[in-house]
Image 1 (cartoon, one colour):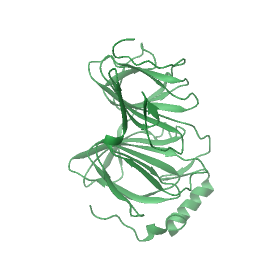
Image 2 (cartoon, one colour):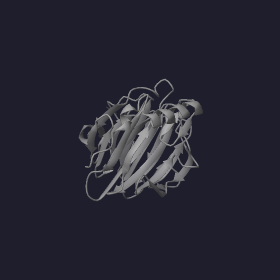
Image 3 (cartoon, helix red, strand yellow):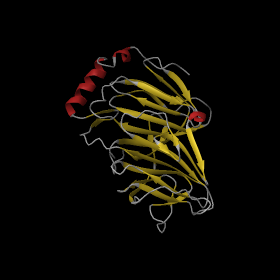
Image 4 (tube, one colour):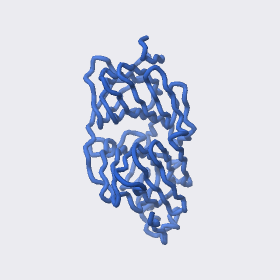
Length: 296
């Protein structure tokens, strides 16, 4: 084992099955996102519905909009965003902060820039099983300084969900999920276990890395890598600069998906019912009738 190598027991390393470059597109009101999951080539990667790398500068943002049937995970990389919903929940998340929101039976909320300049982050949508889709909305918010972290032999990991390198997140995931933010120094080699039955992907934030097998070509920032079968992933940083990426995995639900924008259910009938509930402000959307976000 070299100076910067971390060894774990992996008997069947996962290889890169598919690769996508996330290109900028407009979303919300004036915001720019790089969407890698939820695009026409990859509508759904069970249990993941959307992965956006977003960039937003005031007055652009994501004004009042609804959700039902899944969870949104917002992880800030730069700047701050203020969140407010029709239940009276309001708060600001800054660089390195996390918000894990369970929309459940229904939320109407807004997400708007809270500081000058450009705000950047990641938003992941995690599907909920049929038994959890109509659960009560809930938030799990963790400041960056409180996110579990480990540093071992040239590798740093922030554990947003799951565990890695001896660090474990306190976040409860209704759909079993791992979400790891890795930074590898030049020369570092990572071996990270992943449950064999889970789907998993990597999204590269900075630098370039070699994934799966050491002889493969390096992959650069803004690429999504879908991983094949196996019990873990190997990553090498053979460049002269740091490599940063997220590794996300989840247990597939194996259920039918019916989606209309921010509503995700199992059948078209449930989508029709959701639209009716929202338009009539009932069955979870009662407070939407008179609510509007405040001016920040």
